[in-house]
Image 1 (tube, protein in one colour):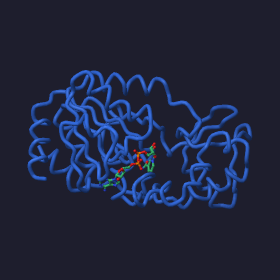
Image 2 (spheres, helix red, strand yellow):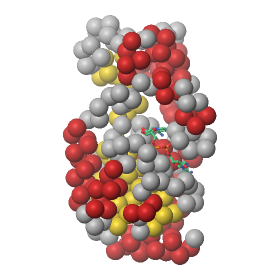
Image 3 (cartoon, protein in one colour):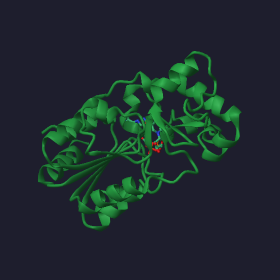
Image 4 (cartoon, helix red, strand yellow):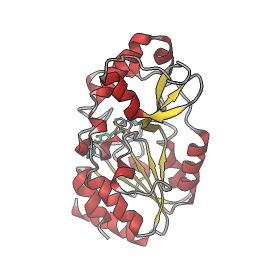
Length: 250
Ligand code: NAD
């Protein structure tokens, strides 16, 4: 309620070093479905997980064709940032934002104007492709153009290897440098703000616990309960597009 919003505003006003963790919930207002919310991709079709599994993707051309077909139609590539993204750009202007850790692969924080030096993409980015043979990275837009032109499993133009998005698939390791940066930001903050994440995926979710353990205040903004609600000073349940701008209005 209004009391909780006021409480959150006070904590933010008092804080000196704020680390933010975002999840799919900051982008649902931009038309990108989340995974585990009521209308989530996994919730509606649990089999979707098989396509975004690294081993299956490498082993099975049919899985790759399905993945490319889904991607070429995905709203992510037409999406524009929403009020939540804008509110986090505002927060950066306060000079108190240590890091903007995101599980999202949509690039909308940078598109909204958040500095790329502050953004750490824990699960990578859907805006690039990498060749699994020679490691060449190219823009996703190029691959999508080839798919639209009829190539149902585009391969590396240099060596013919399998192309994969520069995201972390199930069965893949996270980038250790990015994870260390995220951990450092969780350890160094005095306020940790988790927004739009079900906090069900590790190690990203564990960052909340890390921050809480070193004495940071924790604020959670999410429509549904999370496993970390009991370590939070304030839990806000409303729609992120309304709640976050209110909480962060400086
Ligand atoms: P999640 O789907 O597990 O959880 C999202 C949470 O946000 C849910 O609890 C839901 O109730 C809440 N939510 C959604 N819209 C909301 C709104 N408008 N207001 C308030 N709450 C809202 O997402 P996650 O925790 O980020 O984990 C999912 C994984 O899927 C991540 O690893 C991420 O990489 C990936 N993913 C990314 C995107 C993206 O880039 N936009 C989209 C879907 C999934």
